[in-house]
Length: 565
Image (tube, rainbow, N blue to C red; front, side, top):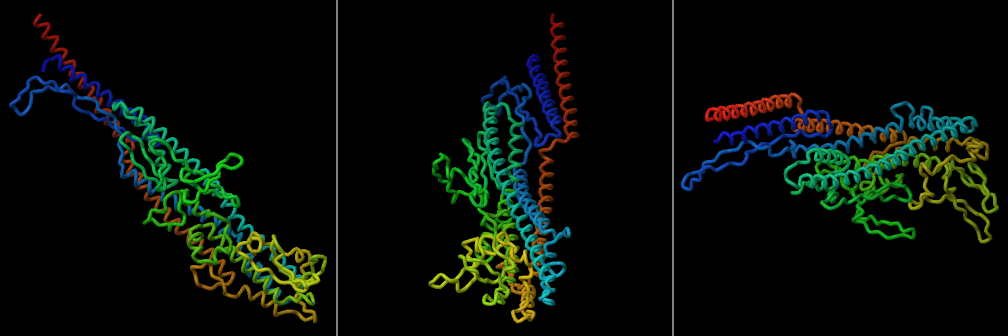
């Protein structure tokens, strides 16, 4: 090779070594940058000069002009990326579920000594007061104690139920927050696609730092919902969320929020799939049937990959309404709509206990009441007429629960209980629709168990106590074990504790899986300071070697010129 041509080889060595040093320095400076992917420089052959064409020979005689700096690439493993994102989404699902279950345990207070069971049972609760009433039915002090304990029982029950309802509202706010964040991430990914395309369209430069930002967004997006994605030939990442197009080459399919007028609960839906009308105020009113983002009726299973994403866990835990005991009456409905929702399941089972306790006591009082003599009755005015009706310890807030039979002249001839109608919440003896009879709060002796003949009504008092001992309840439609009130509540707490333990174990196992996958991925994408320092020494030595090579060629040229001159 001519000596002048040999300078190209040295020049290419200097240039590529300098670029390699720059890449190494960039890696070192981003050693602690979140989401940064280690970069690697690729080298290739420079063009060759043909000095002799040999048509008959095996190859031409060519001289190479050195090394060229091809590109800088990110060092990533697609399989590990996909595994990490799927497992981190599953981990978030179970950690969110465990967090909800822990909050339910806190609301019940069983771990902190402020327990609902105490207000129900034999140790300072309603059952203890009724037990004392069964011993001395005519004792006005005991009658007052029954009303007092009933008040405490109902207040604690409503505190528990309202606490669960308030937590539903908190989760509902998280739904809105996460949907807003998902939409924001979708827009950012789409914007990054455009920026990356602009940088890389020339085929020379790689937008690696922009790709790092996009990969970090994909990591965070995968924690909230199940995603799949692919990169097209132009460098765009196309994302699907819950099996639906989310980020395409041209646009982002935003998720809308439909708010229930009664509960205020949000339901995420695909705006592109929902039909709508324009109301009088010029706003869109969507019909979201068939456009929901999440199918919450699916069985939660790792085999089916239906247990991925924190947002889905929140929606399942929150449910779609305030549950009550009527949600346990149809097994198919319970299994479809209630059983997989942590809060709705607890709400329904807890409300069933309160319903059974209150209606059981009221039923005993109703059976013993005598509207002719006024025994165990209260006198009320109805349409200007004074009538006796059976006294209730627990009344409904929305309605008194009675209807009145009248003759042709409009005179009241009878009083009967109204039946509960599941279609009308005002008729239900539910936790949120109950209060203590104001007449008994004012005058507890109305509960006096003294018959008109002056004898003590031990039979009715014993019947009240028996309601706490009868084993006639099942926790939910899937169970057959008959329970009394105390055992029912104990099983309810045990069910919550067991479910919480299961979620905790799965959550911890998933956290270990995510950590292991992250560590494996980090070995590839992470920057090792020791490795980069070794590379820096290598590339610096290569730079020095190229420099010395150029000096040697220069000295040879100088010697030849001086000799010839």
